[in-house]
Image (tube, rainbow, N blue to C red; front, top):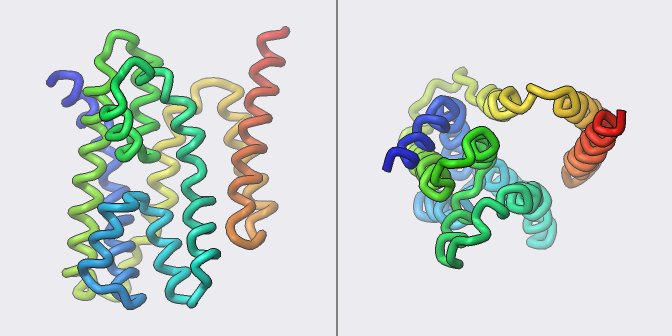
Length: 225
């Protein structure tokens, strides 16, 4: 139980950025024509904030099913990288545990978990991850419901969009403790700026791969020196 609570504690500071994100999704989905059950069910089934917001936006502009699904797939493709990175820590667990972990895998849960696993080899990794993942899940579901039922009562001048980039910046900060991580962040950031206007968010994936390859290159270069 102690390691579970450690996961809750580590991820809790990030919740302040996730709650407005959930409110944005709840309000947007209702305004785009989804009903309450559809909006809340999407949070249970998909459980991926950026993808959910992108999907309701695609539905609003009457995109084809193919484009809508492809958009969600591309945005969520980063989860494959997260999975490949974190899977060695769960290789000895049963399939049921792996399914639960994969469902609860988010940017926030991954970030705090991989940092803790690298720092403390003796921590119970399943309990810690579940603490972080379940906390994020509960926070997202509650904020979605609030967005659905109370979102329309919020002042029109209240801007919640600022929470989205702040959440990802908060996730990035703990990793900037090594030079090749800093290089990765700078190169991927500039690449995203250069290719930001590509259709279907392709610039995001170019930036991801540019960051990965540059980080690996500089890490190997440093080790070779």
